[in-house]
Image 1 (cartoon, rainbow, N blue to C red):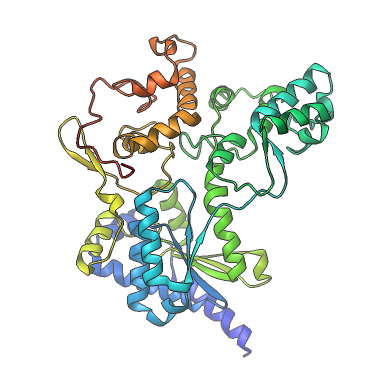
Image 2 (cartoon, helix red, strand yellow):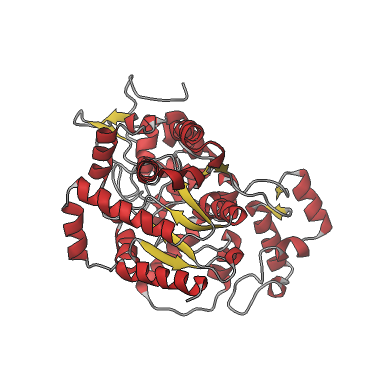
Length: 440
């Protein structure tokens, strides 16, 4: 038997032994003691390293879950940990506590294997959204709009607006700084300008096209769908710039670029099925280790390994305290709620994320209390205006007293207008004198 045949046989055996389970079985697994979960995690980690032919890497966020996974690897696979790459994605909108911790631990545990990646730069100049709108309106007024649209009402491509833009208009855009220059990082401001804000869940913000292309589709498409949910989705989308493209450009793209550079073929992640229904479904259908493809690997497979799938937040904290694992000060940031209970930040993530805006005590409402300066900055830079549009869209044309206030006034108002898009809360539990703000 050749070496290649033997390797493939081992890969098939590993994947076959990682049997998929049902929701009921998952619930039972999640109830088991930490010792059992450590054993299963170590087994999955070992299987991940067993199929690695090139370079293994850990996707490190600076959060408690990926820190625990890193500790497990260092403890049970010390030799492998010495050569494993650590890829930390600095999105530019990280919590300062998380960024400080990630860099400190990266230096102590990772050394030269620690890689801090940032959003990639633009390869060419491009119009800002306001300029794209001007060009689109000019095309409509001059009856040239058909030259840039496909049959389904979408733009042939986004760059076409810059190509058809009259020279005098283009000169004005450059003079008025309505151009994203080549070399500019695809940072948060670029993402929300070109695509939209991370508001509501992933199912709602599933479209990943440029916002100007969505505008064209919503305006010029001849779709005659009678699906009430789809029509309601389009109605809100017409009024609010919603997108989760930031996850792709701030996290996934730079990380995958570094993976390609290092020729990574196994990536370890601290994902848990308990975090969301979609993650639970992925685990049930794929197991701890699953295969995919990356162009830079040619015919060799790429593997995703998620050893903490059956763990819960309680397990993570039990492990941290039992083995004295360091963690970010972010998890000590908190505030007192209306009942006088201390609420701490439960999860790491990007500061301006509003994907859970439909729920009370959502990410942004917590940010307002723990990092008020950062919260105000994001609100004043456009996020507040979009949440207001979302509030108005949810009211379906019904007027509100809050329509008479500008964004600056709403930011200062108590109770907070932006905390919950369903209704304004009837109590004020914010801005205590001893509130935490790391930027002071």
